[in-house]
Image (cartoon, rainbow, N blue to C red):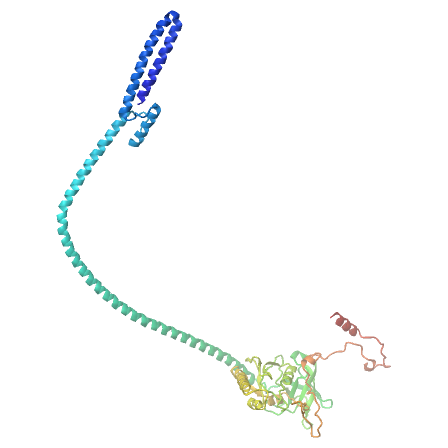
Length: 510
């Protein structure tokens, strides 16, 4: 294809060259020669046209042979042939000729033909082999079927035996698991019970140990004779002024209004011995010295220096703790004197850490360091029998509460002390009956119909004292009439105390 285009181009080039040569020749030779040249040129042109027609005819014949008669343009012809070759053989070199393409196609056809023959031969061989093996396969299949049936039967038998063994193992396992679960549950229950018992034993042991310590302390305390050992000693007695001095004071924690029973020097058990009188602290005179007034003694057996002083409400350097039962009545009027008893105890420096109030509620808690539980001399059931403010259920509930209160004291190892014994031990003396209004229609009357006057017991609550531990001092100017050894008697300057102005200014600022 490329040679044809080259040939055509060459012919055209030759014609043009010839024409150019002829023209040049004619121009050079002159006019005379032009005719000859023209004639020669015409002849050459005619020959070239003849050659061109021949070449076109040959080109058309070649295109018809190749199947490209419909393609007119040479360039299109070349591109079309390239496309066809690429689709038949793939990519080829640009310099490959049409003969090269035909040779490669021929080689491909031969190779494919050879491969087809080989495949057909292999196919025929495979068919022959399949025919020869077909007869063998039928025989082998019969033998295989018999063997398969035998193996299947053996498999079924083995499977049945294995299933039976598996079921037996499952039953055995379930039984063992149930037994194990029961054993585990029982063991865990036993462990819990053992732990609980151990905890209970430990708690009981701890309580017993604590109780033993408490009881040991109580035994030691009793062995050291709290009731047989005096708290103080009378170092001076003045029967004319009815005062005594005791060898305890402010550094010992002694408070004013503390009452002591006085015993003879030879007394051994002050819980059983009869006191010879009682005194009440008025003021502290020093670290280990105080002054007390004589509340009671006998002319035939007066209080003297060397006598022993004792009260269950006070110990040097120690706070005595008490618990109070329900319904404590000091004067026998069937009314509670709880507040008065608390004041008596606290005014001596002791402490009430637990009590049942008049509403029937427990305040505080009884611990093993409580010294005594003070009980009423009248049983609670007898007290509640006359109580019209509570119904039967409330009375029963209060009785249960009181019993629990007393049981807690027993568990803590705290002894009980009846109110009458307590009052006797502290040297309490009732000064007068206090009128109590039982209802709005009547009061306690004397025989002559006169209302009994109210009278103080002499015990002042701490909150009403200016300073329980120290007597108050006047902040102002002493009146002239009280100035000792004034010669002549001084007169007042009329000056107002600075203390008054300070207090006034302080009250204004507040």
